[in-house]
Length: 72
Image (spheres, rainbow, N blue to C red):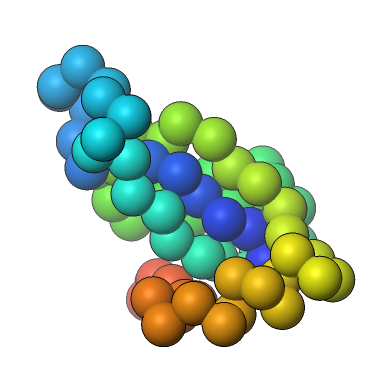
């Protein structure tokens, strides 16, 4: 499953909507997607959304669409 993870760059600053970023990640479950991001970044995760079907096709048309892969 592909997940879109909305996040702030660090956990020390108060979240601001204008500073929200996103990344795309492939993981078996939402819990595992969260664990991957938490283990490999300092991001403050706001929301994780499973995307598939037409929504995924739409997101893939975005020039910024890229699956993030973390090395172990």
